[in-house]
Image (cartoon, rainbow, N blue to C red; front, side, top):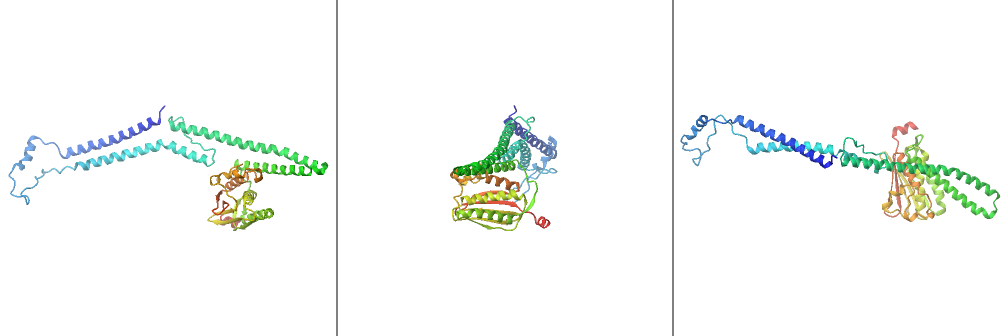
Length: 389
């Protein structure tokens, strides 16, 4: 098998050979030019040329009575040796450097494609491949690219099977859950009063399970790249006001408040999907903020981007877990018990829904206390706003 070491060795040897050939060709050409301007003299010609030198020297050629010998008539002085050598070395370096650069660029091209594929896979593109043709190469870089492609295919198959499993289970649970709710309604008609509390508990758990199944189905659709059926202009100021009004009604029992500061802005997308994305963040902040504290919801425009910030006064999240809270079923270690509530899917739905609208979401810990979730969404251009009115 042709190894990468052998290829590099041959490449550099070829570069040196070509550079050396150019160098010696120039040296031979320079030597021939020198011989053409300074041919070899015969004995009679040499005696004739040296005859003036044998004459007595004139009295003075300078202050010290000495002077340089007169040059040979009709022959210009040869060029300096070091100037000619420097020119030849410069040509050698330029030619050799260009050839080595082109060869190194060609050899490292698969490494650049491999690095690009790794970055795409890290960003969530499960279809990223190197595309290195195995038939044309047989070195270690090609083997590494082929191994990466197989690994990416395996990861894509595992993730897709996991998503398919979640979707299938969610659909299959809908039918028995519906029958359970019908049976619960029939049981309430003939149940004695002492069983009322147990039936209420069964109803609450059924509603919780129904909510979980709905979130799983929504997350499954978003992860599979399903887009909203129709895009419409969504007035974000009014949408935020509705969400904050509902959250304030729920927070009244726990002495918590929700404060809104919003600016008018239009976002192209699905109103219900945007509502669920923002509502999940506000509900999460309302759940973890301290009692008798305030959750702040603020929106503003930065160039052509709507920035929505939700700030709470809760315990925050460890810095190393800030990016992981947007993963499905992820819980911070202190909130894994059942009393914390939630299913661990809400923020994952938020991240997928915002990404589907061309935006981004991130969470940071506030210096004073609490967590800040920032959502960025592209707003509609001004001409589209006018056309939709």
